[in-house]
Image (cartoon, rainbow, N blue to C red; front, side, top):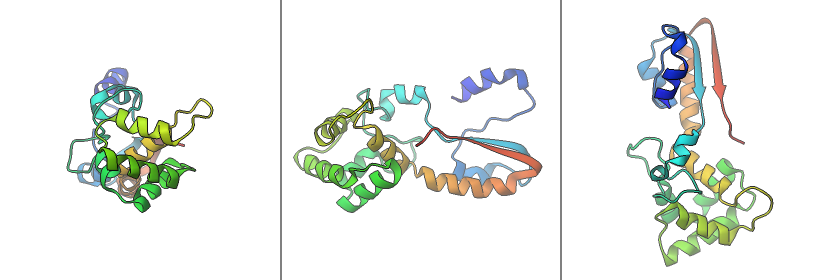
Length: 182
Protein backbone atom coordinates (compact mmCIF):
# COMPACT_ATOMS: atom_id res chain seq x y z
CA UNK A 1 0.00 0.00 0.00
CA UNK A 2 2.87 2.37 0.80
CA UNK A 3 4.58 1.67 -2.51
CA UNK A 4 1.31 2.13 -4.42
CA UNK A 5 0.72 5.48 -2.68
CA UNK A 6 4.26 6.65 -3.46
CA UNK A 7 3.80 5.80 -7.13
CA UNK A 8 0.39 7.40 -7.36
CA UNK A 9 1.48 10.58 -5.55
CA UNK A 10 4.91 10.93 -7.22
CA UNK A 11 3.86 14.08 -9.09
CA UNK A 12 3.42 15.76 -5.68
CA UNK A 13 6.92 14.88 -4.47
CA UNK A 14 8.20 17.24 -1.80
CA UNK A 15 4.69 18.16 -0.69
CA UNK A 16 3.97 15.08 1.38
CA UNK A 17 5.52 12.37 3.48
CA UNK A 18 4.12 8.86 3.73
CA UNK A 19 4.53 7.12 7.05
CA UNK A 20 3.62 3.51 7.71
CA UNK A 21 2.57 2.95 11.29
CA UNK A 22 -0.20 2.66 13.78
CA UNK A 23 -2.24 5.78 14.50
CA UNK A 24 -1.70 5.16 18.22
CA UNK A 25 2.06 5.73 17.75
CA UNK A 26 1.73 8.95 15.77
CA UNK A 27 2.99 11.14 18.64
CA UNK A 28 6.27 9.18 18.64
CA UNK A 29 7.22 9.99 15.05
CA UNK A 30 5.54 13.29 14.19
CA UNK A 31 6.78 16.54 15.70
CA UNK A 32 4.42 18.93 17.47
CA UNK A 33 2.71 21.40 15.10
CA UNK A 34 4.75 20.10 12.15
CA UNK A 35 1.91 19.09 9.80
CA UNK A 36 -0.05 21.22 7.38
CA UNK A 37 -2.32 18.25 6.84
CA UNK A 38 -2.81 14.67 7.95
CA UNK A 39 -4.74 11.92 6.17
CA UNK A 40 -5.68 8.84 8.20
CA UNK A 41 -6.83 5.82 6.18
CA UNK A 42 -8.78 3.53 8.51
CA UNK A 43 -9.53 0.58 6.31
CA UNK A 44 -7.93 -2.53 4.98
CA UNK A 45 -7.13 -2.56 1.30
CA UNK A 46 -8.14 -5.09 -1.31
CA UNK A 47 -4.56 -6.43 -1.58
CA UNK A 48 -4.59 -7.13 2.17
CA UNK A 49 -7.89 -8.97 1.85
CA UNK A 50 -6.64 -10.92 -1.16
CA UNK A 51 -3.50 -12.11 0.63
CA UNK A 52 -4.83 -15.30 2.26
CA UNK A 53 -1.84 -15.63 4.60
CA UNK A 54 -2.99 -12.54 6.53
CA UNK A 55 -6.34 -14.13 7.41
CA UNK A 56 -8.53 -11.09 6.73
CA UNK A 57 -10.76 -12.63 4.07
CA UNK A 58 -13.55 -15.14 4.40
CA UNK A 59 -13.26 -15.80 0.65
CA UNK A 60 -9.68 -17.15 0.77
CA UNK A 61 -8.53 -19.83 3.17
CA UNK A 62 -5.59 -18.95 5.36
CA UNK A 63 -4.52 -18.86 8.98
CA UNK A 64 -7.07 -17.16 11.23
CA UNK A 65 -4.77 -14.24 12.06
CA UNK A 66 -6.06 -10.75 11.08
CA UNK A 67 -3.15 -8.83 12.63
CA UNK A 68 -2.19 -5.67 10.74
CA UNK A 69 1.37 -6.10 11.98
CA UNK A 70 3.09 -9.14 13.37
CA UNK A 71 3.51 -7.63 16.84
CA UNK A 72 2.66 -9.35 20.09
CA UNK A 73 -1.12 -8.92 19.86
CA UNK A 74 -3.50 -11.84 19.92
CA UNK A 75 -4.86 -13.27 16.69
CA UNK A 76 -8.45 -13.84 15.63
CA UNK A 77 -7.89 -17.56 16.34
CA UNK A 78 -6.86 -16.67 19.90
CA UNK A 79 -10.10 -14.77 20.40
CA UNK A 80 -12.51 -17.35 18.98
CA UNK A 81 -10.69 -20.23 20.69
CA UNK A 82 -10.28 -18.73 24.17
CA UNK A 83 -12.65 -15.81 24.78
CA UNK A 84 -15.76 -16.43 26.86
CA UNK A 85 -19.33 -15.97 25.69
CA UNK A 86 -19.55 -12.42 27.08
CA UNK A 87 -16.41 -11.20 25.32
CA UNK A 88 -17.24 -12.76 21.96
CA UNK A 89 -20.77 -11.37 22.12
CA UNK A 90 -19.46 -7.89 23.00
CA UNK A 91 -16.92 -7.94 20.14
CA UNK A 92 -19.52 -9.03 17.59
CA UNK A 93 -22.10 -6.52 18.82
CA UNK A 94 -19.82 -3.49 19.27
CA UNK A 95 -17.46 -3.90 16.32
CA UNK A 96 -19.60 -5.82 13.84
CA UNK A 97 -23.02 -4.42 14.71
CA UNK A 98 -24.12 -8.06 14.56
CA UNK A 99 -27.78 -8.46 15.60
CA UNK A 100 -27.28 -12.20 16.27
CA UNK A 101 -24.14 -11.69 18.36
CA UNK A 102 -25.06 -13.89 21.32
CA UNK A 103 -26.39 -16.67 19.09
CA UNK A 104 -23.20 -16.65 17.00
CA UNK A 105 -20.99 -16.54 20.10
CA UNK A 106 -22.75 -19.59 21.53
CA UNK A 107 -22.37 -21.49 18.25
CA UNK A 108 -18.67 -20.60 18.01
CA UNK A 109 -18.02 -21.79 21.55
CA UNK A 110 -19.84 -25.07 20.83
CA UNK A 111 -17.90 -25.56 17.58
CA UNK A 112 -14.48 -24.93 19.18
CA UNK A 113 -15.21 -27.63 21.76
CA UNK A 114 -15.13 -30.16 18.91
CA UNK A 115 -12.13 -28.65 17.11
CA UNK A 116 -10.27 -25.38 17.62
CA UNK A 117 -10.48 -22.81 14.84
CA UNK A 118 -7.22 -22.59 12.89
CA UNK A 119 -8.15 -21.19 9.47
CA UNK A 120 -10.49 -18.65 7.99
CA UNK A 121 -12.49 -21.41 6.34
CA UNK A 122 -12.90 -23.14 9.74
CA UNK A 123 -14.60 -19.99 10.99
CA UNK A 124 -16.59 -19.51 7.77
CA UNK A 125 -17.99 -23.06 8.06
CA UNK A 126 -19.13 -22.40 11.64
CA UNK A 127 -20.70 -19.09 10.63
CA UNK A 128 -22.46 -20.65 7.63
CA UNK A 129 -24.00 -23.17 10.04
CA UNK A 130 -24.93 -20.49 12.61
CA UNK A 131 -26.31 -17.68 10.44
CA UNK A 132 -28.85 -18.19 7.69
CA UNK A 133 -27.93 -16.50 4.43
CA UNK A 134 -30.42 -13.76 3.67
CA UNK A 135 -29.67 -11.30 0.92
CA UNK A 136 -26.34 -10.58 -0.72
CA UNK A 137 -24.26 -10.13 2.46
CA UNK A 138 -22.18 -13.17 3.40
CA UNK A 139 -22.91 -14.47 6.93
CA UNK A 140 -19.22 -14.01 7.84
CA UNK A 141 -18.98 -10.31 6.91
CA UNK A 142 -19.82 -8.74 10.26
CA UNK A 143 -17.95 -11.33 12.32
CA UNK A 144 -14.75 -10.92 10.29
CA UNK A 145 -15.00 -7.13 10.57
CA UNK A 146 -15.56 -7.34 14.32
CA UNK A 147 -12.66 -9.72 14.90
CA UNK A 148 -10.29 -7.60 12.79
CA UNK A 149 -11.21 -4.48 14.75
CA UNK A 150 -10.76 -6.31 18.07
CA UNK A 151 -7.47 -7.99 17.11
CA UNK A 152 -5.91 -4.68 16.09
CA UNK A 153 -7.60 -2.50 18.73
CA UNK A 154 -8.57 -0.27 15.81
CA UNK A 155 -10.90 2.01 17.76
CA UNK A 156 -8.39 2.44 20.60
CA UNK A 157 -5.63 3.16 18.09
CA UNK A 158 -7.84 5.69 16.31
CA UNK A 159 -8.70 7.43 19.57
CA UNK A 160 -5.04 7.67 20.59
CA UNK A 161 -4.11 8.76 17.06
CA UNK A 162 -6.73 11.51 16.93
CA UNK A 163 -5.54 12.77 20.31
CA UNK A 164 -1.94 12.82 19.04
CA UNK A 165 -2.90 14.50 15.74
CA UNK A 166 -4.52 17.41 17.54
CA UNK A 167 -1.10 18.47 18.84
CA UNK A 168 0.74 17.78 15.59
CA UNK A 169 -1.28 20.02 13.28
CA UNK A 170 0.09 23.47 12.52
CA UNK A 171 -2.22 26.48 12.63
CA UNK A 172 -4.71 26.28 9.75
CA UNK A 173 -3.87 22.64 9.02
CA UNK A 174 -6.41 20.06 7.91
CA UNK A 175 -7.19 16.55 9.08
CA UNK A 176 -8.87 14.10 6.71
CA UNK A 177 -10.04 10.62 7.64
CA UNK A 178 -11.05 7.91 5.15
CA UNK A 179 -13.30 5.14 6.43
CA UNK A 180 -15.38 2.50 4.68
CA UNK A 181 -16.70 0.87 7.85
CA UNK A 182 -20.38 0.62 8.64
